[in-house]
Image 1 (cartoon, rainbow, N blue to C red):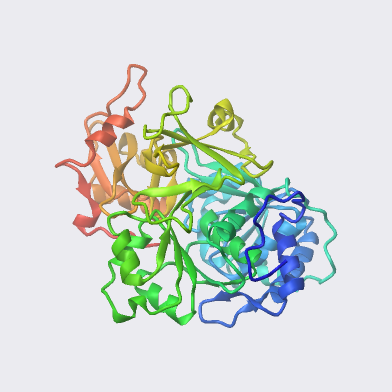
Image 2: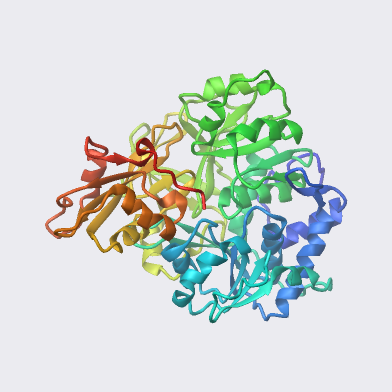
Length: 548
């Protein structure tokens, strides 16, 4: 293989290497002394160093009887520990349960209970949130804590806390388990609408194709330097970006979180050649004051989902780089990419990654394919066995519903033009996407309705005033007879019980919610009504929600 070229240009006949730890071991053998992971301005870790640390953690977990196929919850920030644990669990054939570091309350307890994790690896900063739900997660009994301090165990009555550092002291003997590409490798949670968040059960081949898609469609090589500023518990950072770097054999520069004001300085200082943006990130960068240095860097490409057509051309001119759009979701991988050799096409998310996926637009009522140019629902299916999710964990009825007529229904409206380019238009299903997070309206409503003054509540998406196709959350609330409540007091109730990004921006108190004859809330009507003169806006009111 010529290491200077993307390693895969044809479908393989042997997928045995489509396992994360096996890819890491191969790169350690081929490029052992080359840098792989760099966290901020710290010295980079080489492929060999990461591979050895992965083996140590895997062997240490074996002493705690982690079985093949066992689910292990991971709630860590963007650190070496996160990467190491992912590779170690892959080496053991265990299932990495990726937990959003903002989760608390029922958001956190649902993930732990649905996944069935008995063991968890956690950052010490999140211990108070785990302590609050300890009575609701009876299956969890052991937690390895990164940054464990004396006294941290005091609030816990049943769960045993152990120091994560002990895992890094495991032996270096080879781990002998055989892990196959069809084995489950990860569960990531995505938004629910009429129920809790759904756990996407992802086989090893599905994980691999996220990274391979970046290598193939962005022409990645070992000479690239990839800047990762999104959270690793999401597919974009962990699979598209980090796994792509692993497959290509190039360096990943990982920072704790995205900062629009720091973005350009980081790109320049680290010699970055590729990065990704999601949702409003592209516009936030664009809104920074222009600088002479805007075009003085090595950045050749940004995989932007989306590339806002309102600013895309000027963004590319100003920053002297290319925006490449794609389309995907945790369940289906990234089946659409804009071809590198295609001119910019405003609003298009590209053409099918046809080596591995089929994509079409269908009538959402009949599933018959729509003529070119006609709006419908985007549906996807894989061409490669195990290149898709295996289903929603412990939710078979949701799996069957999504897979009707042997196509996965994305719930997204789109169209295809005469030249075969696809265009995402809007969401069909009642889903929320806020600051890159897919959220469950059901779970937000459960927190709202737990307030003693509230009779019922419905949460809907209203369009953000920021380019990028994201939403703001509107909470429509009916109070119990005789009760009084201010919007600020309602948010005071929400903040300690849900992630910061799930706290509604808008609140409107209503006499009643519009309903069907069967008493189902007409959310479509609420979305159409949107914001009105009686809608309270927390931003306008100066109410601030901290990121923690």
